[in-house]
View 1: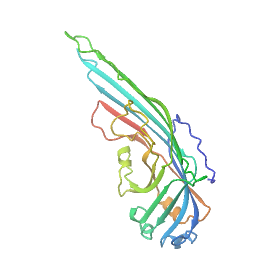
View 2: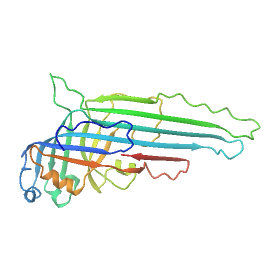
View 3: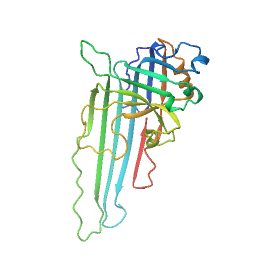
View 4: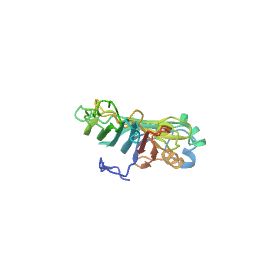
Length: 270
């Protein structure tokens, strides 16, 4: 993929994915990534790089109370959706280091260090390095079934400030980590020894919603969302030469977490 990667993702797209592009800018800070793959895999490799990324992240959740089939039952049905489209708006500078131990085990987190943050100053100003588009919807329904001698207070939905928002940030970052790739969003958010990962942070500069409930677990904003690395990605990163790029796609979908409660559910797409 070329170095002029642009954001071209609709905030309402149904196909969701995380996508990361790394481009080496200078090799040989400590060891050389220009060595032959067999040589570079046997020693430390360190170089500067530039990164770009795109994220499509969505989750839908439902929570119910009461029993609409019982007499004199106060019931509620609350459901919401949170759609996030975020991406870099300029190259984000960083540094990657792989120690020799990573060659023995591509999952060895202690042998893999990556961090990218900020952007190059322009006219002595640090410009935003990423933007995010958000769309939240919340539906509140409820009522009382018949059969009450003295019915309770009628259901009244709570006021909300849901809707569309856009924000820019100077503090988008990429950081090396690990993940447990076992299906649920909760496992993806937790560090483990299962797989190397790069986590992407696109923090909002301020709270975007104050009265738009989005459940209790899933991250509302794109912070610590993972890009899992396969062994082939690790080997490619070790051998990346100056001026070359590597694209790392990653996508997952499923339950937000294992939830034994039949009155609630949550599904995510990343």
